[in-house]
Image (cartoon, rainbow, N blue to C red; front, side):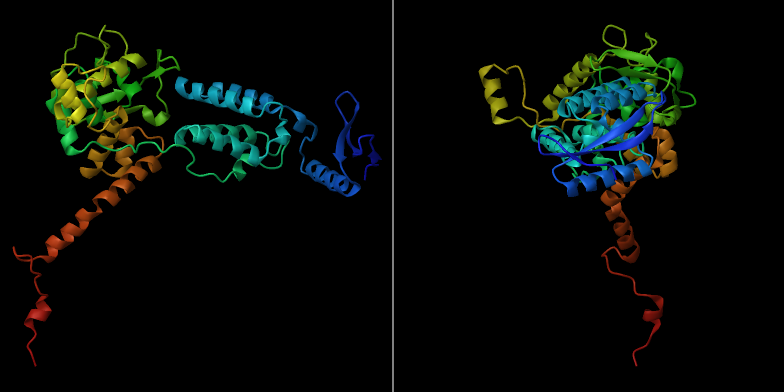
Length: 401
């Protein structure tokens, strides 16, 4: 046991010998405590960490340095521009919140406090989960090297943050709205609804990737958008599974055969170039306003504005669901399910990296449509138009004794 000394400030201090560094210089770890008993406990803890092979001196490295190193490693991975922007924001936040912390000082309650604050600020569950995942990954690199366990794994918060709107498929009525409402965005909606392409995949799609005779769309590149909404082309998709050939239905092939081919891109911008993030928002916002005007229910405020001749900047109150581009992709997966396509094939069509993603959607749809199975049983048991059950042959042939 190291020799304890009492300092002028009343604390007890001991130095634990760690060996020599690469230059032959002796290295020590200083331990401080308010009492000899506490000092003994801390010395024992340090020696246990040394026995596990932990670098106790590196525990004094700043959290910020470890966060920056993790970010540099992420930049070498095949990650989309938007995801990297998300990681950069997460690292910036954690460096600000844990400013001055050493890597060995971060505790679970520190992380919990920050996540709860983010939730109180109105951030969505998805955003809070992103920040939680980032710090979990940062600290995971230090486990077994400088810290014995990951404090982020001890955080027990679940579903923290503003609940986001549930992603769903379009109803049959909403799908018909798309078909019955011509607009420059209609081609985007129809293609995504019947092929399941992601927005970035559709933005990069060229006519050379489309074979209407074979009824296939080849996905071999993606348009990525940075935090400013500027697009950049990558000849690789989000995951390896994203590189795929999608079999499209005849209805989509017939629809695409009528589209103009005066541009290399299937979905160009209004000026003939690549769709930017702002171009997507303007295009889809315009389409949603048209759908709302055509199929929405007019509110008293709408009627008053019309009578006064002053519709205002919002034009008409939104009374239809806020259909998103991802809803269209989800619709394609739902159509595959309803058509009886097995989950493995649906996974390949959707470009999911893991079949478990598709399986979750299929399981959710099973819960929604399970009533149909019971209806089939009712139909089987109902032998007459009136709905009476047909008695079993053995029972009908029995005589009353």
